[in-house]
Image (cartoon, rainbow, N blue to C red; front, top):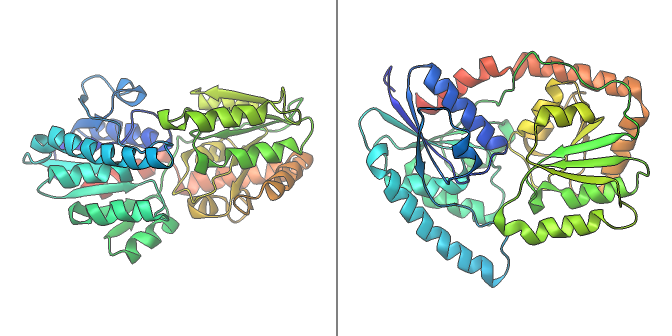
Amino acid sequence: MTDAATIVFIAHTGQVSGAEKVLLNLVDEAETAGHRAVVACPTGRLSESLPDGVRHIAIPELSLGGERGLARGVAACRLVGRWLSAGRSVRSIVRSPGTSTVVNSLFALPVARVAGPKRGASWLVHDTMTSTKQKAVVALSKPVIRVAVSVSEATAVPLKAAGVPTVVSHNGVRWPVEQYGGDLHDPPVVGMVALLTPWKGHTVLLDAVASLPGVRLELAGGSFPGDVDYVEELKRRAAQPDLAGRVEFLGHTDTDAALRRWDVAVSASTSPEAGPLSVLEAMSHGLPVVGTDHGGTTEFLTGGAGVLVEPGTSAALATAIEGVLADGSMRRRLGETARRRVEAEHDLAVTLPQLLKRLTE
């Protein structure tokens, strides 16, 4: 990439979760480095969060959402049409001289394939490739992928096995930051930051907290339009007698403010996370984290930086949460180890320039 170049970022959603927070950080870094940033994404919270002067190209939503059965097949056909439309919208700019193309999500990859950037596209990998659907999208898009930049070693493994040129560059968070935790709140509060979509494991967490009388649960995060039924299912579960009055759905909220109220942060995903930013944010503040033992979560929490549990098992999750809440010295040890790991390996001031370089070199 030239010293002063255009970087086009392509995202599949207009929502803002961990992957989109990374994109916004990269846009800031690109602008600071003197590059021109352009973001192609659906109109929404992401486009509204872009810095002044950053060009936004509006494209359709590029996810299947939560549709099931025949509706899912119809949604897949519509998605192909949206890929074609979005590809045409960005084709002229990604083919311009001195332009780098960065795809921020798996379901935006076919847009780059349609658009055909001359240098190919770099893919910032926020998803661990495990399903047939994901593998199909990667196979379709592989000819345009110049390099895949994975945010964890675990996520890089299936990509390398599929013959995708892959490097690893870890996520980071702001550092130094204030330390939270310490004495328990009354009542104790457990929290999770994640989109309300099935694979994030909310039902497992609700069942776990149901077996912990007196513990409150806060769930932060929005949802996809197609996941309306799932969100209603979660709210019905939360209203049952064993949880009634103990669960709050925060929606989009200030993460730092939520972390201040929590005694334990949880990542309950039933499929492997690539490099969950919510886990790193909790770790940076010294909040004890209980996470499922796969993907990037394992890499973050291993060696005493958190507690790892078997995915999809509410009993194991409940036991781990209960153990952390009951042991103040454990909470302090977990928090201190986590903060040291963030300082050594996930300081955003170090990781962000490295990540942008990997994506554009």
